Image (cartoon, rainbow, N blue to C red; front, side, top):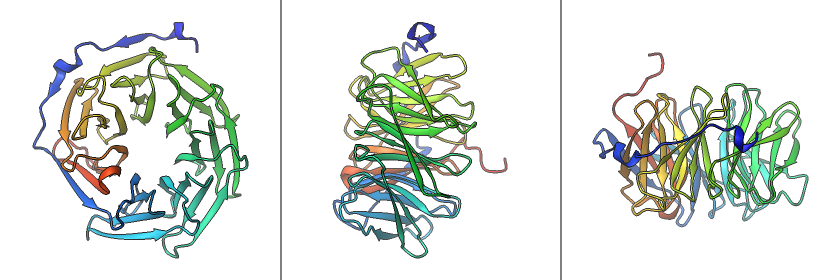
Length: 336
């Protein structure tokens, strides 16, 4: 779509819509077992167990919120650099071996790891994985400038180059129709993948200086992104092409990073450029922000996920912790 076709709305005065920190948000943190692990991405499996990648420790970690106990699963290939991870319907944990160019599958019951190497040596750094509704795994390859598809039934890996050079495909989500979307951290674009044809369409953001990093999606299939370089929260409406942007409360150097939605379609993200890092909540209905400092400082929260109850789980890389953000009010519980 040409830039001229976009209806671009930039929300002004968002700083005036900032609510103060709320006592209804409780942030808890736990130190992971291995020092200097650099926990990178979190995930929650179907049993409510919290997983994370220990990128520098070469492990996948599991945390039981009920017992507050950890277990680490060492990876057989040295220096794999596990990055992103996601659980499948059977409880297997799929992860990207970011330093060694493969996608892996861990069976937690046995500890067995199956590796799926990239078919192209230029796809050296698989990044963020996510399943669609059919059980197909999609993933980004940042420096390799590709997106990938892995069929768990056959083990076949297929790659496509992103049309824009040095686009650095980064975060990824799948919409209600099974369509993968991804950010291009090296450009000012959002990408969309046609899952049948495996064709890529790019949406140009209004500012040439935008560098969208992570991505989230609300129940109306609107795409939300953190603009790391400009300090903005942005939204793309695929149905109309409309883009809206809101300045993040921490200002232009706040470096918004990890982002997720809760069951009420509120946006939560981390401002990684301020000290301490702050968890920011944004309500699209009221367009109000609230900011909550992370007790440990955060050490850059690169990714976050919400469980079915709207509890946010974080990986706090620089302080070797995982964190929980627990809203106490306004949550829609399962079955309500």
